[in-house]
Image (cartoon, rainbow, N blue to C red):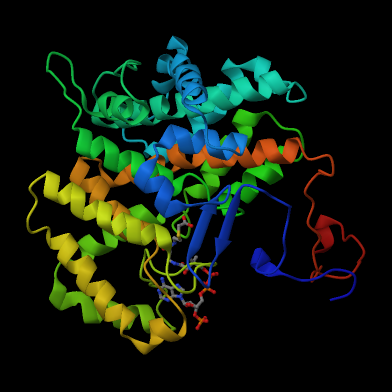
Length: 392
Ligand code: CMC
């Protein structure tokens, strides 16, 4: 391989040093700043996780109150943004709207372009954590043709988000605290995952000194794909397509067939080769939400449980160490809460925003930071002479 190490898909290349998230894929361990994901999801809330990821320590009560207040102050988007939205087709996919509107924030908040100023970096971070839920809710409202709902900042972060999505004019809306807590936990599970594709994209975009909103838009674009954040949408569509338990063997056979591109969506992970600790918490959350909503027999849940059971006892999946990942159960939960499939990846983007920002900030503040610039192994034509068009 000449001068360079050839590592397609970066399976064995560390691109940075980081103090934010630790994963042990063989043991199924995920730590944010040293704290196990299970403990954060059980005892903490999402904004506490945001503070932890950004600042490196859990906040004191006073720091938490201050942080919540600062995020809350930034939840409104400029009214012009509402007009900006009108340019999207009404049936636009919410992720298309997210990529576009997050990118557009760089045009609304020019002061954040000066990333050499720590204060501006902080303000940009707060703006994104606060405004991306507002944009996600607007993306949803836009696709269903309902008026936008302004943030209500007396509510906590996730309850406010639910209200912006599901409140309609002239009708009373009361946030269900069980659902709000469950969604908050889903946000915690998605908050960071070290150098995954979208986070690496944010770092690469940011390594040139680009505007932070533009960098997060780049990460959002990367997240959209079905191999990454788009898997939650793809997994639910797959469960719907399978439809009932009798059809499962057919799909298992398809997934194992080398000549069939079909994969079990929500299965497998580049790093987790034992189990995905997030999937375990997610499965529990799914049951809590279905219980709360009084959904006794969800046919999709039956298919999911049986699919998991069959796959985990099949030698193909065992040998390749393919386990359900976080996206396998998240779809069922979000659907039960009332989110359409097309919103699932936008919710992932909302939650991952803090991870992207924490990683971006860590990179900008790292004195050894250089522009990201991979090399290649050239396999094209050797040098040759130009032929004029008439002689080709
Ligand atoms: N169903 C069937 N076979 C699979 C699957 C699957 N879901 N995943 C991997 N394999 C097979 C694959 O065909 C390959 O077989 P072989 O070695 O014989 O060629 C082997 O397992 C290794 O797969 P890979 O594609 O080389 O592994 P990777 O680390 O490059 O890809 C992955 C990881 C997550 C993209 C992949 O497992 C996948 O496509 N899963 C389905 C999509 C999904 O659920 N993605 C969400 C990941 S978690 C959340 C997130 O990142 O957003």
